[in-house]
Structure formats: structure tokens, C-alpha cells
Amino acid sequence: MEAGIGRIRVIRTPIFLETHDWDYSVYGQDLKGRKYLLFFGRFELRKGFQVLCQALENALAHNDEIVVVLVGRDMKSAVAPSMAEYARSLLSRYADRIVIMDKLPHPQLYPIVDRAHLVVLPSLMDNLPNACLEAMGLGKPIIGTRGASFEEMITDGENGFLVAPNEPGQLAEKINTVWNDPRLEEIGKAASLRALDFAPEHTVQELLSYYREILNGNAKGE
Image (tube, rainbow, N blue to C red):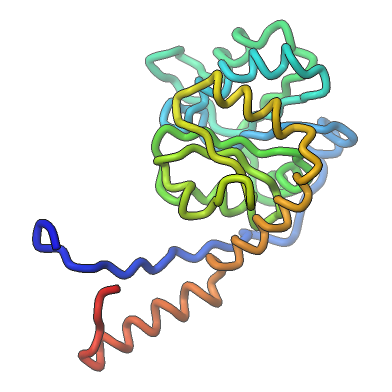
């Protein structure tokens, strides 16, 4: 025991898809029939957005097939007053293969996630991000980063992929390597199974069980 803290029991936060009433209008207008890599979340430094943009310079140069879709709230940062404009400027040579969208409501977002070929979430720091669990729940293979809580959800090479944070070269190499990996569909299915561990029917019951232990005076850390 260190700092007075004994063994700790971890009870996961439940995750579920916000809606099953999907709106395909945005997907149909901009993305239907395209094979694309997807990032969705805030365009900010903590989410590794600038790292992704730098990695995409390499990935797009080495693979003419990749189309990139970036969906989320634009943010200003120490890198640029608009991270969306930063992406457009850095990747201007590939403008015809870049689609940037503002934050979308879940009914319009989920069809875009569901049809993605690969999801990339290169956070520098994070805390069990909903974006990862939502994508896994929809059966998507994900590239996440080590040390940013993705290890709790992703086993590298089994239900997703992990790379070091803040390493655009390594991220680009991983994107190029897995883009045509014949196991992607299998890995996506494994991701959806892993996401079930975070479903309310599991996590809520675990929490209720712990509360009962407390009320009965026999709760123990694990």
C-alpha cells in the first residue's frame, strides 16, 4: 500500500449509443461510396489533432486510396487560431481527399462512424473516451495511443491498434500498415465484443452490487 491507498476496485462507466434513429443525410451527401479514415472529437492538442495532421501528410503521400474525414468542434490553440484551418493548410496538396465537418449530432454522426474503414484517435491525454467506445461498439478498428487510457479498451493487434503518443511518424506508419490489413473486419468484430464489457447491463449491475456490499458492511477493495 502506498500513500494510504489500498487495493482499488475499478467499476467502469457505462457506455451506450445515444440513439438508434440515424440520419444518413450528411453521409449520403458527402461520403457515400468513399473509403475513409475517420477522426471525430474536438480539434484540440490534447486529442492529438495536430499529431494526426502531421501523420496524414505522410500517409496520404504514400497511399492514394486514403480519404480523410475529420468531424468535430474547431478549436484555437498554441499551434493555430483555428485547428481546422491548420489541417486544411498542412494538407492542402490533398484537398480533394480531405473532408472537414463541424460537430454533428449523434443521429448524423453515427452513420459516418459506422461506414468508416478505420478510426484514428491519437490523444495525448484522455480518460476512457466515449469516442473510442462508440466506435468500438459500432465494430470499427481503432488506432489509439498508449498512456491515454486506450489500453483499458484496446489490446494491440487483437481488437484495435496502439501507438506511442505524439509520434506522427509512428502513427503514419501504423496507418499505412493497417489500411489494407485483411484482418480489419475481424478486428472490428473483436472491438464490438470488447465494447459489450462497458454496456450498462454489465457496469450498472457491478455498481449496484458494490453498493449492496457497502450497505451490508462487507465491501472490500480488489
